[in-house]
Amino acid sequence: MLSRLQVCVRPCVSVCRWAHTKEKGKALMLNPHTNKGMAFTLKERQILGLQGLLPPKIETQDIQAMRFQRNLRKMSDPLYIYLMGIQERNEKLFYRVLMEDIDALMPIVYTPTVGLACTQYGHIFRRPKGLFISIMDQGHIHSVLDNWPETNVKAVVVTDGERILGLGDLGVYGMGIPVGKLCLYTACAGIRPERCLPVCIDVGTDNETLLRDPFYMGLYQRRDRSQRYDDLIDEFMEAVVDKYGQDTLIQFEDFGNHNAFRFLKKYREKYCTFNDDIQGTAAVALAGLLATRRVVGKPITEHRVLFLGAGEAALGIANLIVMAMMEEGMSQADARKKIWMFDKYGLLEQEAFVHPSPGEVKSFLDAVNVIKPTAIIGVAGAGRLFTHDVIKAMGCLNERPIIFALSNPTAKAECTAEDAYSLTQGRCLFASGSPFGPVTLEDGSILIPGQGNNAYIFPGVALAVILSGVRHISDTVFLEAAKTLADQLTDEELSQGRLYPPLSKIREVSLQMAVKVVEYLYAKGMAFRYPEPLDKDAYVRSKVWNTNYESFLPEIYDWPGADIITQIHSDTPRSYGIH
Image 1 (cartoon, helix red, strand yellow):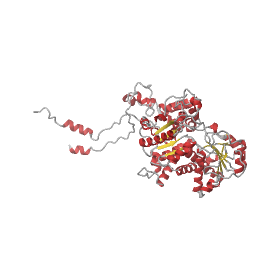
Image 2: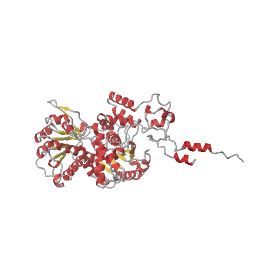
Image 3: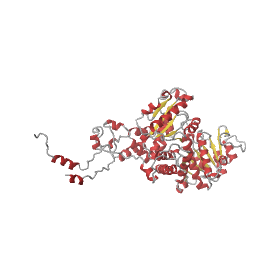
């Protein structure tokens, strides 16, 4: 008998992919992580208590996606509500459809539509998303985090709602921004949605309209700007890393200018954190500027850049441009002399970009004519301030003028793509923050404007940071990301007028960026996840979440030699009952 056992000890290995869940019945269908709608198989329905709770038809995800897409095409105004409603019901279906039509749907879940949705957040509210922490919770933030159902969070996007896009103080209505950002973490870079936590910190609002709005959902008080506010943010940061780990990524989003800069300075060496409005915007703008080099034939050190606006975005972009110039051999002092800033008070004469005024400047047009920039970058959020005269002046000064109208949403952009191209006879190199459609010139040629969308940067950087176990995020990471993005633009795309790859390629763009940044982090000794993966590309791609449905059936498997053991047991004489 021993010999029979020895022959049959080869293990039986199951290769079926399945997902463990303790939920059964209606609870499975109410959880967006597990709900598959009519795609639950017959066995799943019978074993998991779903039989009779669904129509008899068993559908594929392909049919579900087709229904979803057909409904989207029929709709107009309630698109955001319908789209995000699917996310609340069936997560994998939502992300599949979003990824397959990212060109059309990113403007819905992100800028510009998300801005409008934020202004109406209390009026279109269906189901709470994310975690709301108010100043009244001070001293108890860890307990509030304990209420979040997911325990393995790797990425947090947090806002206090003070400066939502170009729309100003929206208080807790700003929650739509962290929710939208984290949608793109998943859609663009494949970061698992259950590892993402959107947070809105409510310390009040100075928006009089909201304070009078009966549907407003936050604290009816003016924004607390006392030491309590700083103490609350300190407590929040400490609670996040205490609960989820020191390498938890914390992205700051749409804080007021003053707070954005000082929190970045305060926390960047203590936590794994970045501010997308400062560093993400900087990287995508620099990538566009680097891409123009292949057209104008000038290295970045030969550019003169004039900013309209001197807030967090402008200073972030300017500082990263300085870093890029220094990498090409220019001193910091000389690089800063290449950059000028103009805001509502005139030419900026503070911070690191102080220059003696080269002439009388009373308007932005004066600044263009006096400074003679090769590039103008608009980040003022004040609407059409790149006037026809400004655009024409840029066209006279430069054979290929560079015009970046980066303010969001679309109504806040400094100029339209059509104005930029038509007033320079199609010679300008244009990028905007919100999307503009293709422009047909008088000669019939068609130019496709580049959208300087931060989504080209932050998902890939976030994936790299999470997979590398980074503790602190250096600005050099965003310089590397900008160079990687610029390198992915093809010559054909550049000839079409684009300064960025098409949005339809953003998943691959994000993964390649993650690979390059992971390589950079390990090369510079910034990564703390060991052992270091030898094949970084394979490592990154192996961690990407996909939208295929998983089986929720319990794993069924045989024990090796179980039939032999059963036979041995049946052959053994029963001694009990014999005297």
